[in-house]
Image (cartoon, rainbow, N blue to C red; front, side, top):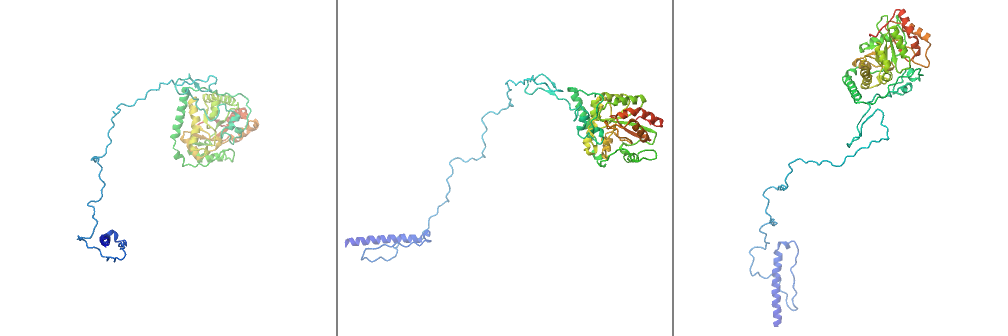
Length: 446
């Protein structure tokens, strides 16, 4: 019995303790959202279950149980390092700054010496000097460019030149050379020749740059051709030449002279066939001055003949550098073509050209205006005939009669080709007969 009473006392104490715990759980806000049952304790058999009443608190709470909040929010403890009160500044380097400019040590290695190739023949036209001990190659002067075409121009290479072949069949044929040509040998370049060429190019560039192409552009670029033949008026003058003279005379173009008993002889020189010396002899014997329109290749190949033309009082005209169709060329290229021959004649013969004959007789208003801007008079013709086929020359008597019958008109500008053997044979008689008909074979003055 004593043990039973002890056990019952212990059980009562345990129940009281559990009651306190349950009350605390029910009053805990964290447990209000959960269904936490009050724990149940089984008693010993035969022992009535104690009532489910919480034991009275020995010290009642005056306030509900509330979890004590922290007095201050959780803050990470500050670093022990002393905060930097001033902005972070990188400490200056302890090295002493370089107050003097950096000097690169000179290269002391032995420079490479270019060994001249003694087995190779130097290029023709290039001045070679003693090999230099410097790093760069041996200096040399380059031969100035003479032209797009070879100096040794002949009847075959003439046809291969860009645009040189034209509606003149004599330009496309292969004439038989009856006399040797005088060719200009290639001359090695010198500093003077190089500077001379630079000066020539500079003058040509200045002349072209000073040309106002905008003014020329207001004229028509329509390509026109000029041949020969056609109806004539009561004086025997070509009606086409008279019409073109009125239409294009303001652009310094000459198709026919004034209606006076004067005629003018002009010759086209594309290449030398060997008859120009005879023609010059005849003109000198008759006291006649003519106009010779030459190309740049002709001037280079025949300097003696060109010099003779000038010395004997003839006019040397500009027949272009490359003998191309000028209306098909850009204006700047056309200007360069004219000025290249112009400057060559001025530099090598001291001669200032002023007459221009468009190749193939092809022109436009812009071409005429361009030549005028460059200080030229464009010269065409009022009569010519088919005399340029060197392998199919017309009979001399027939040609003489044709010339006297058709070319003998007031103000005639006669075009002959110096490659014609027939022209060389009949020239003297033609001059004599024209004078007999009352015409003056006059010096150019149009």
